[in-house]
Length: 244
Picture 1 (cartoon, rainbow, N blue to C red):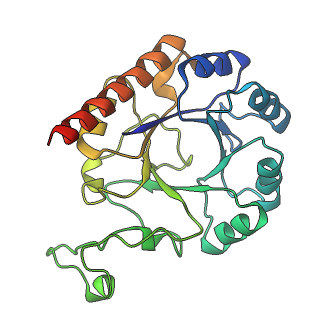
Picture 2 (picture 1 turned 120 degrees about the vertical axis):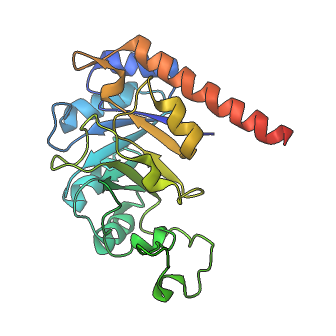
């Protein structure tokens, strides 16, 4: 059953909406963005957030101590990293505060190289002739390797210079071999295409921001409709699988 993340919350009214609808995750953006919030605003909003909803802080190459302090102070429950954070960075963050990590991967026409350590999340990839290099298959076979300790999830988003938040989709066929990987799917999702995304990919979580906005502001009806749609589709999938 796919979970739901509503990203880019910045107003008390946004919190009121999600407290009623109860998505699984919400996002506070601390990286450069029109949705960016400062520390004091995020802290005030988090105090009003229903504790059943996990707050994710969105960062780009942020100081580790800053993220760790936010996590220790209860402002965020998880960190979503969109920059050049490598295995050493994520390991240090985990050691500093135990913060669960979502590592974002920008996707163009193909998956780009990942930071050291994150590549082990992914299944072996064939070359243009359809052959998988032996170096990628030794000891792995057809089974996905376990997640490394430093990254709990991947988030696939549309590749862009602004590190996410483009409101554009990418070619989902790039992810067709990643069934079973616990990833967040982002990039241009909305009421018009989230059904297809879930049916084709069954991601762990669908992540939406501009797709539930009107004129740059979170829209209550769109959020309500989006969450209901995702949960309705996921429930039907579970019921179908149970019958099988």
